[in-house]
Amino acid sequence: MNAGKLLFAQLMDFLPWTSFARSVARYDGDHRVRSLSCAEQFRAMAFAQLTYRESLRDIEACLSAQPAKLYPMGFRSPVRRSTLAEANESRDWRIYAELAQRLMLQARKLYANEDLGMDLDAAAYALDSTTIDLCLSLFPWAHFRSTKSAVKMHTLLDLRGNIPTFIRVTCGDVHDVNILDQIVPQPGAYYVMDRGYLDYSRLYRIHLAGGFFVTRAKSNLDACRIYSRPTDKQTGVLADQSIALNGYGSRKDYPSHLRRIRFRDPDTGKYLVFLTNQFTLPATIICALYKCRWQIELFFKWIKQHLRIKAFDGTSENAVKTQIWIAVSVYLLVAIVKKRLDLPGSLYTLLQVISVTLFEKMPISQALQQNNYTSPQLTDSNQLILFNF
Image (tube, rainbow, N blue to C red; front, side, top):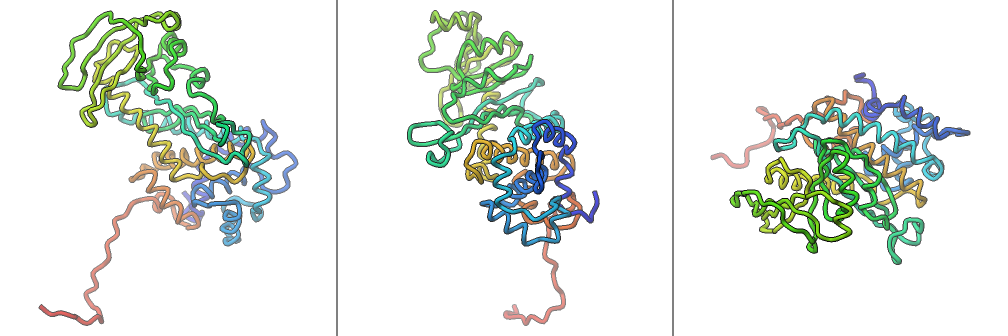
């Protein structure tokens, strides 16, 4: 890497700009654009994510303070907040969605061999959504409730490396279970979901596609026991049964047998009931797999705390989706840089270091390495000794 480049420019070199240019051409993103191309818009919004800028005025002020470094960062002219606001409102958000999806593919290949923490060779995914509350008067298009607006970010997370593989941004009133219709099940893969996705017809579609699901049963489950397997209650597994659904509608939606596992969490003492179509794995592996679902909650918490997806720089649907997809791209970019350069530390640590070194001219691997600095001991000092023991 060229040591003369700004660290921000070195980060941007990891992006697939050729694929991005094809997406821009597909949606006419730069049609009749005189200033601030789509690539510059992405750079400006990525700069805001990496440095925790709070508003368009904040972005303009920070970039204007470094006029000599704008061109090395990839900007042909100064970034004005009015131009950036217009770009967020008018440039098709699908341009940045396709960029994020391209980065997802790259990141998944890099993290494909990550340890899942259990004896499981197949792919494992966690499916969930997070709600981002919005002001009803400013975002009337984001239907949620009669008194508030919101958008939902539905995410399918690869548990090997915590890399999102599927994201949909919808209005807040879209039920989680509807997202199962948009996911193409992968044969042999495991899909871990909470009770909000318990729909027998949709789960049966995963079963017919050769995939496996792990979810929790509802309290009103109506089923009869077909067979009970021996269990070791010392592991927390209280029952491991094959069941058949009793209800006319549920049996019609899912005509095959299910596996029901009753489990007592040794840490919290809470009793949990799992449903799955996987009959060969040990019950302890099924319970551990569901416990891994917590990784998607940590993913949502991370991006909400360390990226800007709770306060938006525009009020239109296009501006909101553009900002969310660019935030996801920044998360994936940092994850890709971490893996390719084999950097120590967490993504949070790397993001903190990047936020204060973007304008530095040093190799990115040197800037992001964690060096344990110790203050040198001065042997010759003019400081007088206060106490002499």
